[in-house]
Length: 240
Image (cartoon, rainbow, N blue to C red; front, side, top):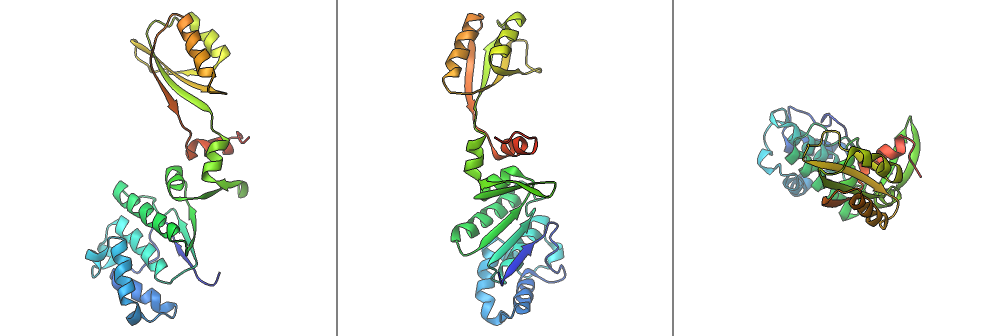
């Protein structure tokens, strides 16, 4: 692609002595764009990243989150076709990270820009990306849509809380029959169990066995896998 921009981790994309407006005018001019004709677009771009009140503040005086958003604005003012984002939310507070995620999602939904997003934060990747490439030791080990990867490793996971009437002798038979793990830090008043079942119908058989063991289920909640669990399954050799 002729026009490629990048936002590097550590907000190294901007000149800290220049203001946000001056930074965008400078980077626009580097790519042959007349800053005078770009002023309204620059104003809108800064506004979209909630930097309008800092337009004339030197970049060095901005917070880390604002510097990172300014770096994104500097990349976008060049009107790229491909945008590379390297750990764009690393080190940001919750609000700044969400602002960055929101803007990246908006850019992706506009459909005029291809975004390559590199991150170790699986929650952010799951939130903003359509497709995922997992690298291990420099090799691509999987490439697919986010929802397909989650479906691939989807299991019937449940969290159960029982009363304190489950005898120790009854635990081993349950563990042998089902894929269970008992919370070692649970209180004396109740028993907490994580169950991974092959099929939804198995939960009824599990409940029957618990009842036969003389215990009562206080609560039962179904768990859904997330991209972090999928990633760990893949890199630890659990890919199906």
